[in-house]
Length: 214
Image (cartoon, rainbow, N blue to C red; front, side, top):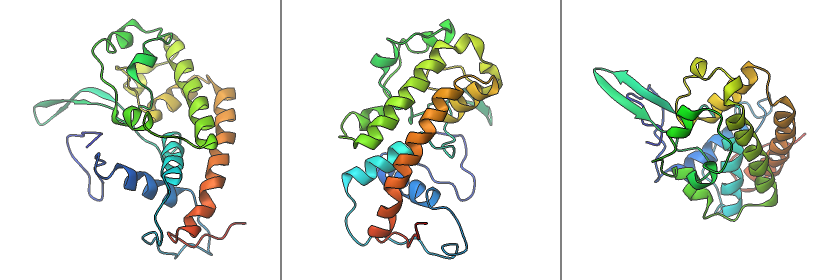
């Protein structure tokens, strides 16, 4: 699993390289339609036609910056007398790029020395993104760079941040905790909703779910 936790709770799904794209689609199509009395009892179905690469990419990028993205990286997690290092394979940028950014915490910068690229960073490097997805990823990069540049002003210990590959849940919440980056997050929300509005009608077109757009 990408997020190699020491245990998996009932009903959880381990995301692997083999099911990554399917997991991205399922998460997006379950989260994007707004629940209401019209679609509340609708069933999610297998797509009736082949999904385009653009749709898969759009779903993935939307997930990366969704509030329901609860990814995290954790260091030295002890469970049943074993110590685990939980990497965040959903960190979307290459190590070589991150090393060029301003990182204001020397301990976190040190964890980059022997770091390897995450699965998602490698996956994204091989994709040709739509303009909407590209715009959101660019804005997301602004937030990541802002986060690294302001590590000295945030309470990293409160959110268990000890390594370079912090998850989106950690980054979003640690900045919100001290009211930093609100303007950039507001700008991201506009782009995130724009990508959602692009994905939503496709859910019906692909026969995954009947969604009434209002």
